Image 1 (cartoon, helix red, strand yellow):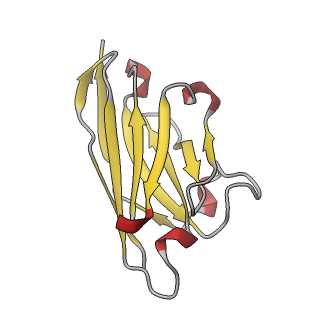
Image 2: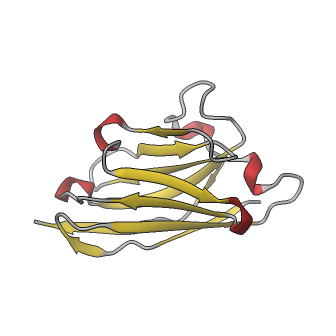
Length: 130
C-alpha cells in the first residue's frame, strides 16, 4: 500500500509563503512516477476541496481557478516527493492540506473528484492570520 506523509504546515501571517511537502513510499508493482499526485484542503465545516494536480512525469499541472495565481504544484520523482508552494497567503487558505495519489491521469475525467484517489496522507495544518 502506498504511504503518504505531508509536512510543512505552519501558522503564518497573511501575505507570507509556505512550501508543503509530501513523501511517498510503499510502492510494489508500480513506481512513483506512474501516479498522478494531487493536493486537497479542508477547512472546518467545509468539504474537502481539490487545489492542484500533476501528471506522473510532471509535464502538466491542474489548479483550482481561485488559487492558480498563488499555488504551484511540483514533484521530485527521484526522491518520491510532491510539493505545494503557496505565496501571498490569505486567511481563507486556512485548512488541513492533504496529498493524494491516483493511477488515473488528471486529463481523463474530473481530476478534482476525491473518489478517484486511492491513497491519502494524514494532512498538515496551515493557519493564516490577518
